[in-house]
Picture 1 (cartoon, one colour):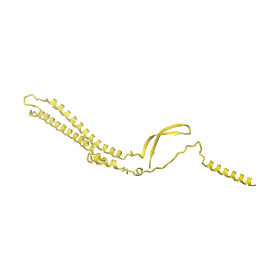
Picture 2: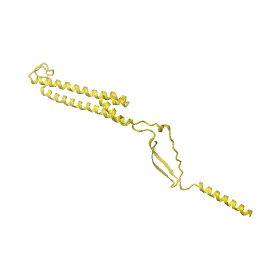
Picture 3: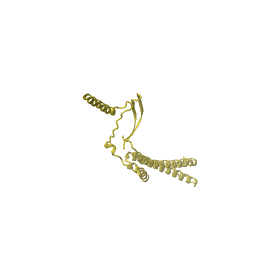
Picture 4: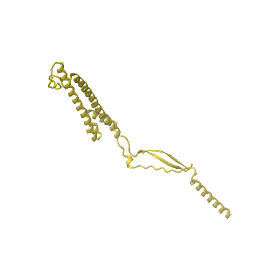
Length: 201
């Protein structure tokens, strides 16, 4: 009777040990992965996005060229904007003055006078009337072209301020990244290659 109790106790102990071992046994077909949630202080700091910032920068540049660039804190662009627009205005003014000179001289010639600045001292003019007509056409063309270029620089100033304000709000921090991915697959004994997109909230 004592041996049956001992045998029964030993068998009961073995079964309890086997059941406990079977609960912690690892399946050979599964791959264990560790998931960790890491939150850093840098990922919690977010910049506020102002949806009206590009419109405001464009409006400021339309009111005064270069003001939108100052609003975007791109101060080095202000002399470029002012130089381009001022240069266009000066070229326009120069061609306008030249057109007036040629036109006034041609009008005096048509009226029968020989005292314009392009006539000279003798009886034959230094610049003929036909040459004055061609000079007027050239000066008018240059005047119109310089006006178009100046308007183009003004429009580019507004466009630059708008696009720059958009790009300043573009998210380029480490919370959003695309990186190559390599992982060894133990089940198939192969390597997995790919791209990983990380986005931290």
